[in-house]
Image (cartoon, rainbow, N blue to C red; front, side, top):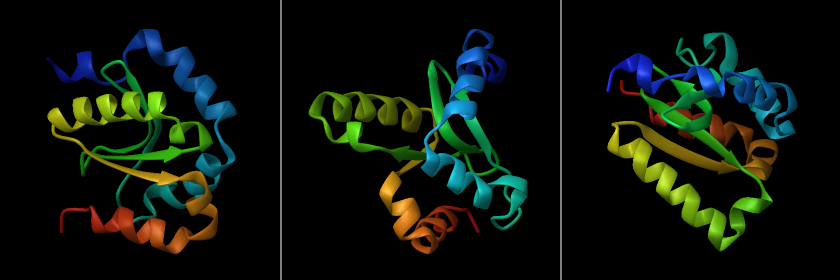
Length: 121
């Protein structure tokens, strides 16, 4: 599968934009610290699609995906879908890390540190 077929498929463009504009407050808050290459010069993209999935944050240089999970992600049926999605992305060579929305607000320093710990040095 070519890169163009895998990333930012055209049919998901409108949905990606909606998610960016109406995303969770935790996403907007974390974006302030990931945008503009603030994390060791790594560029992140917000609401980037890979295959048929839209990920919250993606760092192309690191092939790193950061997902933020709200309350709905505690439901068993959603956890199953999340695992299927993570397996798919990891099989393509991406690293996926997840944080609860609450953690972004309560422990931002540790969230940012964990993200940076996943950078290849």
